[in-house]
Image (cartoon, rainbow, N blue to C red):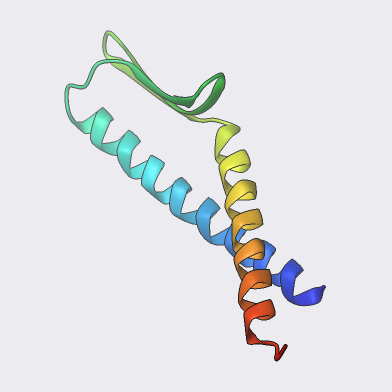
Length: 90
């Protein structure tokens, strides 16, 4: 059980950090360029919002990043379970 929990935590943390860095870079690129306002979402769950209003810009990293990271952690734990079962002799 501990192996699956560790796999879940590592997968969740890795995807969260990668999404956070990637979306921050996207926000910096959008602010540096003359991009118009846009939103990145998975249905109603918002991942990222960039707004430009005149001379001001704002970025928001949404709660969807947490959901995607948790889902990735579950997939990672599932992969660990499959690999562990395949390694056992029948």
